[in-house]
Length: 198
Image: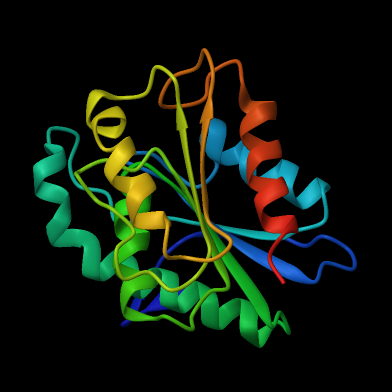
């Protein structure tokens, strides 16, 4: 894929007869076929959703999370390019599934493109972000033993979902920031949410 003259990787998996496509957005310092991201992109495709997992901006190994907000505009541009790619492929409905820092990048896109996607599954978002001002249905998904900054914001995020029809917050028990050993519940929560999107 290409955004503002820069090429970046996208892994495109077509589900036969899919009526919706899903952009999968990874978190800090990883790639579009890593661990739980690979699980989301392949298992959602197995369950009827075409997926496009995209490479987000990655800083050097020593970069602290605080350095990443400077990359958010570029991240949003990559999501915009992915949405266009899927629309050009004939998918009228495109949703976002994002994790961790990727959710923070996705928030920038969704806030500035209210008609860009039809729904957003936001996994493990931290940084104090809420869904204030978001217009599409949101799934706020997190693990019982998630990162401190994710857990600290659960009440504020839940409150911010109240005015967004079709939105909900779900906690998966006995798992961490990466939904380790509970990937099937993670995928089911995302699929159940996407299945409700008109």
